[in-house]
Picture 1 (cartoon, rainbow, N blue to C red):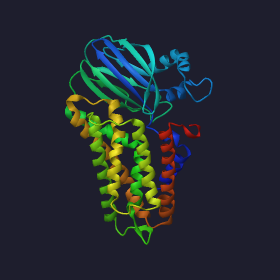
Picture 2: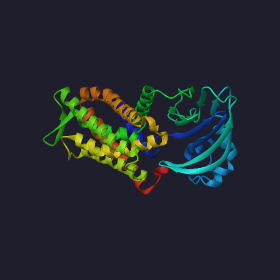
Picture 3: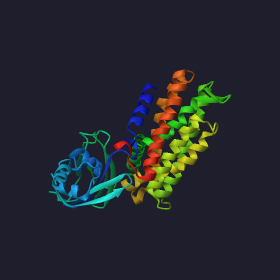
Picture 4: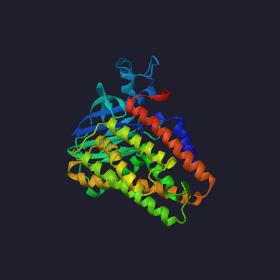
Length: 373
């Protein structure tokens, strides 16, 4: 429980660092026989962190500053990517562009190459930024002779082998399940919203004051209602967005997610919804579903396994949430009557969550970077 308090303090001290999704790059590779073509989108903020692009120190990366370091950028990126098919494939950056993602500007590297063999498995090893940021991930979509593979590349991935044979449905499901777990764990705004709803799960309001519940079963039922409602709601909008039936501007979605965290935390301080918090979880879960959809949009869903991939991703998010619950709830229940929990964790924690989310909300609504981060 002390770790939770320390985490909240860290979030308050560096709100902008957590205001958007964690550091990702997006790598799309098309391998046909011996030929390789690829597009690699790398966040400008990550390149600046590694290479120092901002030459005049104005906190803005210009096209001129990026072009001036194009050779350095190309060498740095290619030194952290290996592709092999019958031996090492030769790779070169053919052009450089800039594009905008939901979390800011990205350099777009267009890569071409050739491999020694036209058939057989393809091996890929990704090492971008891992020496600087263990939380960085590479989101890969590979088309290997007409067969699509998607995966998340992490420091533990090592050399990943891909076959031109069609991926089994079970493997497709488990891969998206893993990605669902990972993306709830790095979705800090989603986690803070969930924690805002979990904090009062071991408490009840009596005479306009919070006190501990009498038994664990009451708290467990409350949590199961909250988590299941959140999952059901985001599954609805996630599916609608992934199927292309509904689309909302990412800035609007991110702002609404930040607002949901503010309101959920504020309700702990000034209780308005004292019962049936699962309704709050369901209502705002509809908004959070669009946030998860942006992840799948970048990963790309295989058309022949769309439903299975959605089920796997949703199941992964549920598993990720339940893992958080499994750690948090027993500790919260044991400490529910203590001043440490009632004042330190619940009240102070709710205030910190609300203040962090307010910073996110202002940044996302007005497209700002506060406190210089």
